[in-house]
Image (cartoon, rainbow, N blue to C red; front, side, top):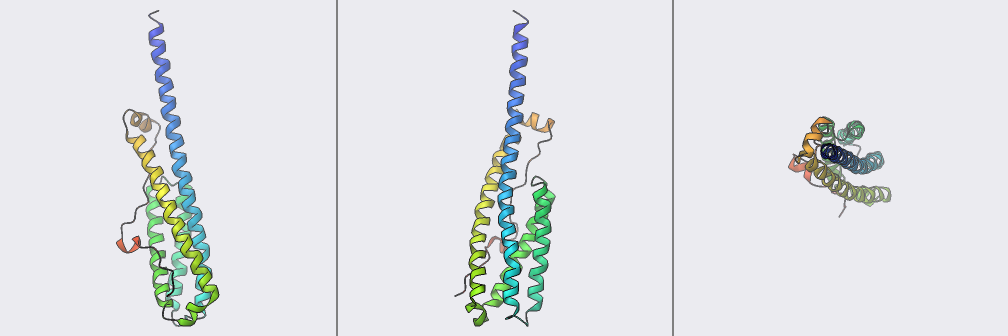
Length: 195
């Protein structure tokens, strides 16, 4: 009878450890899945940008530097997104992605501000379609970012909570970075509506 008590405690402890470990794995997979949704929307944005640049190129002959800036920023964002998608828990890759996406959004903002001054471009049907798609994509990115941050918060709470944090440390479950924006100018969505 005395031997059953320690055995029962050991079984309960092992069961608890397994439940916590499996819960952490499930939460980590949820935030990775949430990042995958961001990645899909970023890819959609990145795919729309060449169409936007190409449509604008004919009208904005004197704005070559802005078009090149957007193209370069897009390439950097695609590269950073690829690295972050490989491991959304890597805070360095996420910081690089946030910087690259911030530069891309800033470049798009400048391009769209310049485009406002060209009535023929504003009236171009191809441009209007690309702008509509870009606007819808920006909304999707915002929702995907929110879902990602929600999943990361649930995961991080579990990683930090006692006694789960003991197992989290033992099995190298590190906190995941949130998708945050440090620059106030980057907080604004790309304005894609022509008046």
